[in-house]
Length: 94
Image (cartoon, rainbow, N blue to C red; front, top):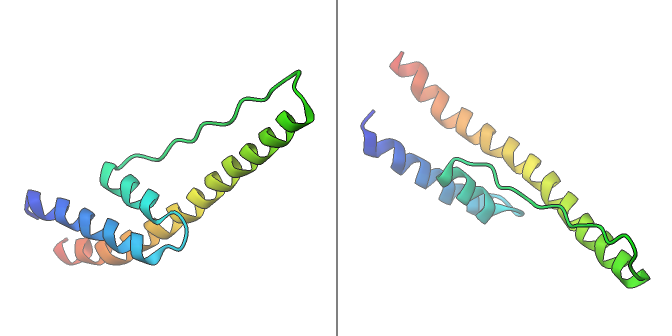
């Protein structure tokens, strides 16, 4: 495999994943291109806050958990696509 062809394959896979995934498509493309998992920061809990502060924290924490769950699902789909497309090519070359 030529060095440039792997890079182009990763780029085309990232573009393909953006179109396939309903949620987290752009995030999956960035992770595929950079080959790094996205990081999410958990919101900081306010200890002596008002009821409004607690509701804001609950909302932000819910979004944080949803993003993490969505990434786990997306990661499985990325692995499925990569294994279905590229493992067959590797077997043929071996």
